Length: 116
Image 1: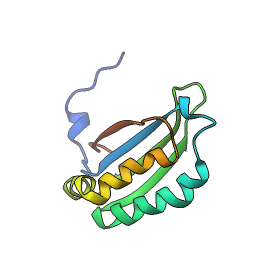
Image 2: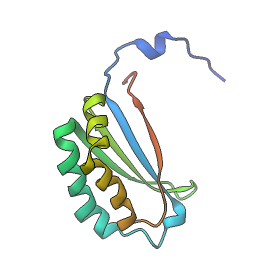
Image 3: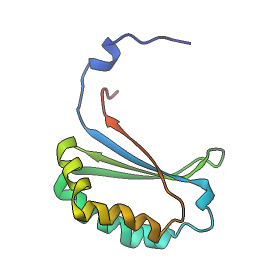
Image 4: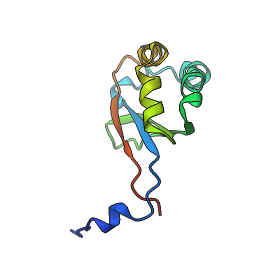
């Protein structure tokens, strides 16, 4: 297995913040894509666009994985994201996940350290 020294992690840093929600495959057949795309993502934009949201990527996960949908949100400012997430509007938005999925998503987040 190749090893990577620290220089690979510090070269050309962007400092964008990535927030991902990995929706489990157990929600398959119960995940309301219509609500997700037409209502929830608009609510997401309303809360997070002013908080430095620069891109949203929705991925249909490979069927061999434990996940159905991966929602990736890219922010230019982690502090602004966290402030919005901790706000009453952010908490309502996170609770809205139950409106389209019976399963709790896995959260993965972090700072972009390099872009090729």
